Image (cartoon, rainbow, N blue to C red):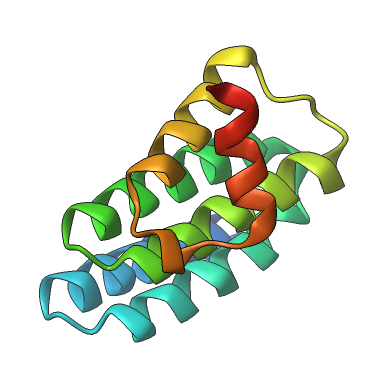
Length: 128
C-alpha cells in the first residue's frame, strides 16, 4: 500500500508562516535593517492580534523586540513597538499588569527623549 500524504492544515501553515516571519524580523535586526524589521513586527502584530490565542505570544514578541531594538540604539523603532504593545492591550480589552506597565514605562524612559510621543512622556511621568 502506498502511504498517503497528509495535507497541511491551515493552523499548521499559519504557524509555519509565523515562525518564518519572526525569523525574518530577527535576521533584519542582525543585518542592521531596523526599518524592515519594524515593518515585519507591525505585520506580525496585525496578524497575531486577530487571534485571541496568540495575544500572550504577541505581547512577549513586541516587548522582546522593543528591548532588542533599544539595545541596538534604535530608539524610535523601540518606542514604536512599545506604543504598538500599549495599543494592543487597549484593543484587546486586556488590562496590563502593573509589572507590564512598569516594564513599558521603564523601557520608554531609557530611550532618547525625541524617540517617543507625548503619551509616552506622560507614562514615564506617572511612573516617577
